[in-house]
Image (cartoon, rainbow, N blue to C red; front, side, top):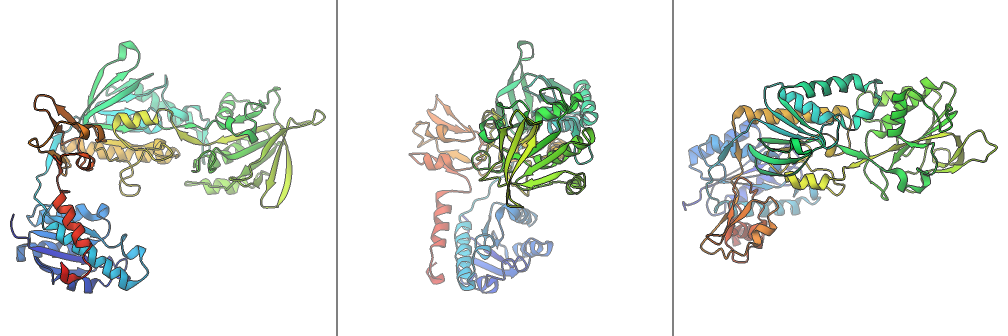
Length: 577
């Protein structure tokens, strides 16, 4: 291995780092270390001048290793790797130290923060000396795309890609397209007909020559890797077949919460306690009536049913409040003299025009009452036979501090949303992760919100978390742009920091196969050794840590590299390094 000639660059990140870390001092201290040829500090290393500084130093000082101490590698590691490439240096001869999130943002003592930053930079310098050049790899892209889920997000993605002439396989487990939106009457905040939007799209999907729709169909497992996936679908006997495609979009949506588990609301006990889904059906049929066939005189609308409560789901379902406001307007238009009561924990009018909808609704003689969503839910009781209403809502109203009895003859429960029953099966089939609420996890919540850690697999719509029409459509189009971009290139680069097996010391125990989360390892029975599919491998290191003989080595995360980094991190004095 050639003698390391290391360039070190400490970023101010404006004041993000410099306010808590003495970056000039750290840069000067690094000059004392062996193999450090250049050590500088700069206000914004990620800027074009900052990158040009690195490129210039590489060329003028014959640098062959670079360390940048700045923000999270998730944000700018690729930026600096590209700078190395532009200077003619292999991009993997680079190491990044995070002194913003790991130091500046979590410390209040400037001296301690500076010492910690110094240790992290030393650790990066010690490690980068053992980095090896790695060659990039690419695979060809099959231009077909598999879309799982035929709701508004899946339909949007299918049409966008199909219009470019590419093949789409659209998988839907139900016998209809449209998802939950197929049962909605009007959209908020503009109160426009959902079916005027949805029906033409469904018709276009069904007639499009580049879209093949599979209803009543599910997938068992997706095999392969980005650009070259395949699956066997299970539906009726005559559509059962193998499909091949280059990318996957998961758009499986969410399901309504079942309110029968909340005893306070007596759903299933009182027939005029209905869910928002059932009320939408009533609206589509054009008649708002109680079980007795009469128009209700008093209607209660209860928010956050199954949401924002640790006994059920702690998260907000996002669309419930605006739906409640929509219902209040529809009720007022249909029943001008009815009493309408909105009972809410917190009013959260998400989205463009929804806060305005809240304001306008409050002017229409709608009574808004607040309750303790987490600890004191309203209770629905039966009314006496002499009353001209069927039920009473008992609520401890927070704003007035009074205990109220609200007479109603219909209650609409704004049920929240939760993950589909088969969410785990889909996650396993396509190789993606789930959070504790069984929503699918994106690669990065801000910087990469539709991609996943499995290259070529994207998540869109409310399978990622509750969201409305606009956000679902936006995510679908974002995923489409990523997929069409990769198809246009014809090939895609795949990760090279993968595991590799030393066949000379592999004992054939297959422990690595059992622990690999990406099913990237198989067994060669003839050689009695494990074999890594480097396209499927994500370099997570699970196999390397589990291997009893040390036969698996993870490129770019070798034992020597990691141990040298630890050695540098544990150095108490600069002179000891």
